[in-house]
Image (tube, rainbow, N blue to C red; front, side, top):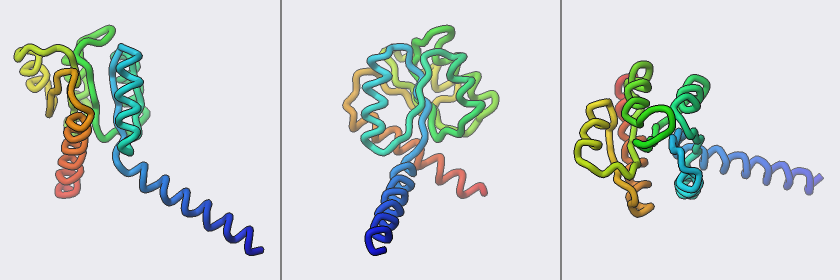
Length: 151
């Protein structure tokens, strides 16, 4: 009997830890380059974020209809439409969730178009992993604070 109790206690601890680890945030990362998707997903997962990925606008919009995300992380150059176009489409039905661009599009006009479309931040690739995590954490935390104040 003691062995069963110990196993049950261990299982409960593992489930509790998984719930704590799942609390960092749920991110949709839209990037058409597979290597970039894999790398950024790995970096975010190491910092306790749950990440779903899409490689084009249609897939991204489909995922937003069936999942709740804490942040949208978008490349500006993606298949089927630009990141700015996707940002505008996201803002049509989700005006509050933070959007962070993570893109190689480095002109100031690229950044301004993204911010005008409704993004809260714009990082130009490459950046240090710590800077990416810092921005993601900042935006998700700010959105959670704002949402708890308005409720």
